[in-house]
Image (cartoon, rainbow, N blue to C red; front, top):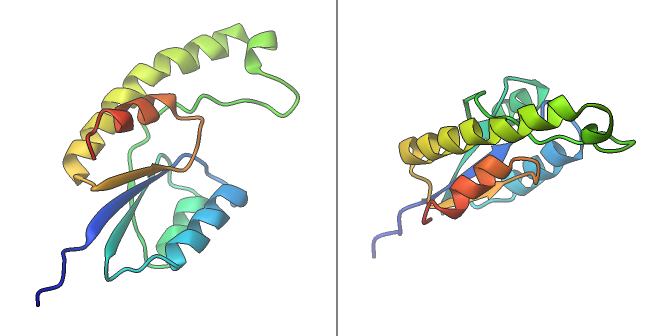
Length: 130
């Protein structure tokens, strides 16, 4: 009997540091059955986080044309810097278009967005049909 083809999972990671999100994603990836799944990690920047994934043998792709909708620990940017909120909001259009292009090129079977601060990417993923 022929083995089923591996399913490609695209993991989208926005962060650059070595905090909890990349550590947990790496732990998940290390336990993923690579005979059944082909993991690809899309990092929006070359960073210590992307280096971590590459050092563990995972395929990492880059496209920096994504704008995270960030927050700060002592409150939301909008209170002190409304222009940043507008820039981040308008950046979601480019993020959406970039994500659609990446999804079209990579043709994943499943998309995991490892963040809630990428609304443009999340919106594109919801319309991807995978």
